Image (cartoon, rainbow, N blue to C red; front, side, top):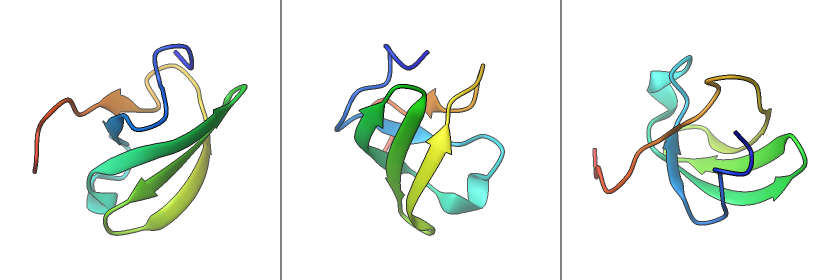
Amino acid sequence: MSSEITPGMRVRLPARPDWGLGQVQSVAGDRVTVNFENAGKVTIRLGAGTLEPAGDDPA
């Protein structure tokens, strides 16, 4: 999945919907740093289905 996640991409973390929409800041191996609306910068270790692309969804 990490090859599908790229810097600048908008994503959501289904396990934490309260964090809101996030923007990928960096990808290093299986670690992704995302700046979330309601949680700030968080580094996440990717696993199957960890992050999902949010597309152009503004909400």
